Amino acid sequence: MKTNLRHLFSFHSSLFSAAAPSAAHRHLFSFHSSLFSAAASAAAHRPLFTFLFSLFTLAASAALAATPLLCNPYTFVGRITDARAAAFDNQRPAILSAYSTADAAGAPPTLLARSTTFYRDDTPHNYRLTIPMSSTPADGCALQNDLLEITATDDAGRLWTGVIDPATVGTPGTLCEVDIVLSEDADGDGIDDALLQDLINEWAASDYYTPDTPFDIHADPDGDDLSTLDEAHLGTDPFNPSDTLQIDSLDLTTTPPSLTASLPAGHVYTLETTPSLTSPWTPTDFTSTPSSSPRRTLSTPSTPARTPVTLYLLPTTNPSPAFLRLSTR
Ligand SMILES: [Ca+2]
Ligand SMILES: [Ca+2]
Image 1 (tube, rainbow, N blue to C red):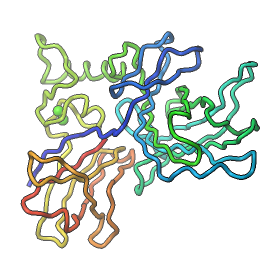
Image 2 (image 1 turned 135 degrees about the vertical axis):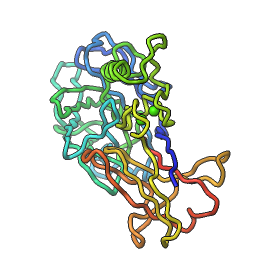
Image 3 (image 1 turned 120 degrees about the horizontal axis):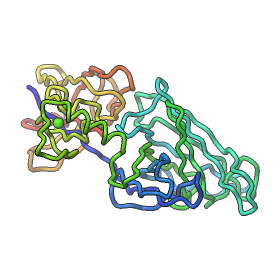
Image 4 (image 1 turned 45 degrees about the horizontal axis):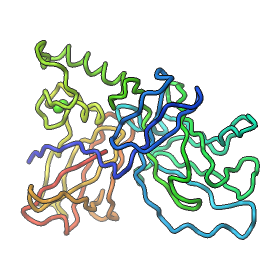
C-alpha cells in the first residue's frame, strides 16, 4: 500500500515578524498574521529572523524566590531552521546568544546566555536557551520585562539579530517555545529571497518549465500533492514526482501493525489518523519498536538525507478502516 502524504505546517502559533529596526543592528518584533513573513526593513539587505511562537506554558510560574536578587530564569526552547526549514543540529551547528539590550546611557549589550543547537531523537526541539534573571540589576542577569537581543550565527558564519520582548512570551520560570527561522525577505512577500530565486532557476531548467506560465511557488508542477514551497521546506525535489514524502508500506500482519517510510532529514514528524477523509486528522502515539514506550513525535537528523524508519501503531490507532498519514512542520 502506498499512501501519499502531505507536508503540513503545524505551527500552532502566532507570529512575530521583524519591524523596521530602530538601530542598524537591531530588529524589533511585533505580532503578524501570517507565517514566514518579515516586514521590509530600512536595512533590507540585512538578514532578519522571524520568531514563530507556538507555545505553551509547562507549569505555572513559581512565585519569585524569597531572595531579593535571583529569580526564575527565562527558558526558551524550540526549533531553529533555515529558509528551507532544514533544522540546525550538532552536525550543522548554529549558535544562539542572548544579550541584554544597551541601556539609555549607551552601555553595550552584555552576554546573558549562549547555546548551540543539538540533535535529540526524543524531543522536537533543537535548542534550549536559559537566561538568568534577577529582580534588581546584576551583571549577567536580565530583569523581568527587559528587551532581550537574540543573535544566531549559522553554519555559514552569518550573524542574524533580533530583539524579543520577554513580556510577551510568558513570565520567568515558565518554558516558552520559540521557533526561529533564519530567513531574508527584503521584498516582504513572505518567501526567503534566495530560496525563491533558487526555485525559479530550478523550475526554468526542469521539464515543467512553460514560458507562458508565470512561476507559482504554491503550485505542484510534478503532481506529487506537495507544493513547490512545501517541497523546498521538506527538502524534496519540487520537479521530481518520485521524490516526495510517503508511507512506503503498511503491514497489518505484524503485531502491532507497522509502517515503513524514508523520512527527509531535519524535520519533526507526527503520525496522524482519521476514521474518514471527511473527518479531522488527529495526532496519535506510536512506538519505534514493538515494545518501546509510546511517543508522539519523531525527529530526523540533518544527515543522512533520508532516514528509514519503521513505526508501530498502538491498538487505538488501528481502527479498520482508518487512514494514516505522516505530517511534519
Ligand atoms: Ca510537488
Ligand atoms: Ca517532488
